[in-house]
Length: 162
Ligand code: MG
Image (cartoon, rainbow, N blue to C red; front, side, top):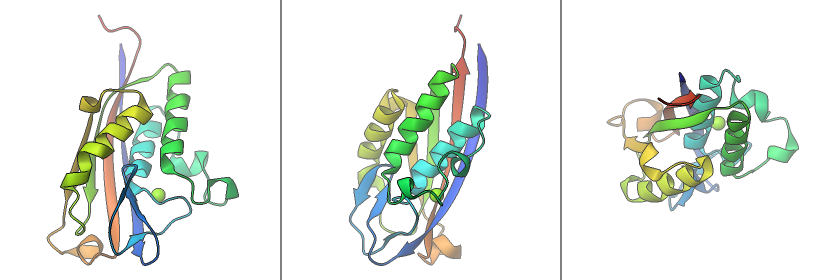
């Protein structure tokens, strides 16, 4: 069996007049994330980790932000497309671990639904997706609530486990 790890990182700015979508879940908040797509920073970090592990480059290469077809797109569609690319190359996902870095709002109550949706999109069990949220103790751009960052690590496997 071959195993590959991948990591991903993304940041989006917080602005007024946009919905806040994190991990495929719309979260009530006074600010939302700016971006070409729905700006779901957690899914973008996850897509980059998946593409990285498979040696397939990054999200910008597959879904350029100059392409109008991706304007305001639901990032869950991008994640499903990334998984199709991986499955085509014979990879399956062992597990994914995500960290969302946000000073506000509190995310703990939304994590089970994020986990359920991301697992469904990636065709794995919810137990294979771990999602954590942390603040930065009010330090830096995340702490000043200027933006939200996310990090992801994944393990891909191919071949037959014995
Ligand atoms: Mg992004």
